[in-house]
Image (cartoon, rainbow, N blue to C red; front, side):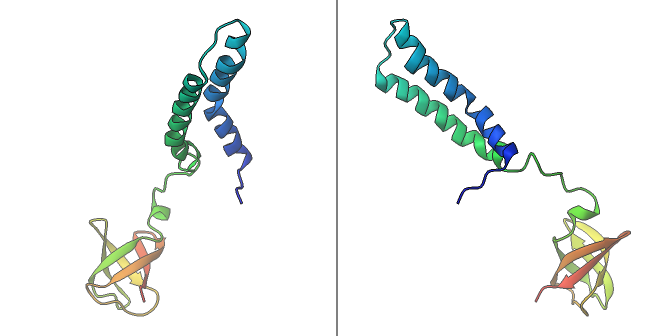
Length: 131
């Protein structure tokens, strides 16, 4: 079942405004003033406009515009790091090419293993072994 938020519904209507305007113009206004557009031509124009919307809609409705960028410590949570110095429970991990002090919350993690960042405390990342 499709569930669209009110904000996304307004975005979708704004995205479809050109189809609505062009459709009314081609199929209602032009015939009233005596200009006949072949049905296939009108449908072709509408299809091209809809195709454009299908290409743009994921960027407009996909939620990326609504989501705050993940910067600072909260951007690290959930990421995977490589242990470069045994965590017993403290040591060093490599995360996106940078070295971080780390503390393993669920025991020890050996060099070469991967861990998941669960929190950040100052300049230290708190990690858990990946089982």
